[in-house]
Image 1 (spheres, rainbow, N blue to C red):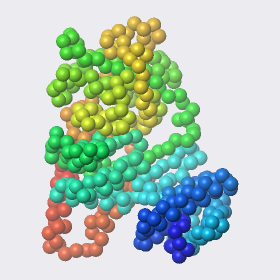
Image 2 (cartoon, rainbow, N blue to C red):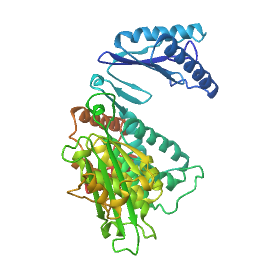
Image 3 (cartoon, rainbow, N blue to C red):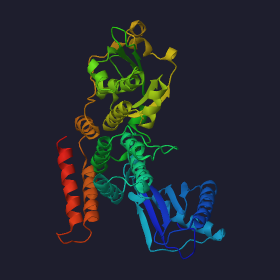
Length: 458
């Protein structure tokens, strides 16, 4: 609801699902608002939202002059009445508009579509509007042809982060966005360019985002049900690197799964193949890369056990811990490992919480050095199979290979959503039929055709 003026046009969105609903009203975007008016609207809306929650029991929130109210279907109308009355009491009446939308199971709010149709099963989905994704894809096509203008970089990255964070699970896409931020100087407070990021790497990141956006899955929230009744898996990982040792690089894993009927404790103690080290940039020490590799190998080696589970991952290396937690790292080798790790978590529907553990308390410290004695006493069973990631694949190919192998088949809803995105892209590219002689249209068509060939060959 707009709190700026009585004659502001308002739009109302109500989301109802199995007896639950959400109501949102927002001001007419055509008018816009000055910073002063936005501050006034924000102060009024937050005050009224607080009063509505604490005094009238309405579960609501406010973002500037937008309200988000979740409640039973039958209470949606009364919630609006309360908000309107509160505005009248404070002398900031709400306008009556023509954009009032009745309660529905699926409705958009601030560019994000919320789906409460499976709320009773303890699941809520969120996804970006197809039109928002189509605009980003159109921008990427333009940047692939002309480069990313410095004036548009931060705005473009902000939109990408919004789509990625508000509409996907995990931290997928952050590594590619981080590459672009460092290449344009739009990352961090210093804004310094990273000259080590080549044009080929920038193009790889853009192509991956072009590939990802139409396929980006919905974000799934679990509130109750079977997932919450299952205890999480405790995963301890560690690594060691000593260049002069007979086995210079090793990783260790120890996991505890209360639901594993065969063996609650399992462990891995293995040397890292030389081909993995050879694929990284030469340096004196590889410990951060190895510590980042360890949890990836653990999940990749036992995907069936981790699928659909909550995981608490204990790491004793702060560089690997922060990189995995953020979903990105300045080091290119770590960033690629992190990208593969979160792609795998997304495909397997794994929710991971990362936690620091001191080396002396890390159960994986001993197996990383080839010592399994303590774990044997605990009744641990060694991994029967170990799989290593393909580090030679680029961002798009690694995502596609993992997704095709581990992700579930697309549902009918997923197919409808992909079709809606394709329609939005088509409408954006050709809103009005144009003459075939348009050179810009032909040029952009060649770019799209080249991208399809490029991605298809991967």
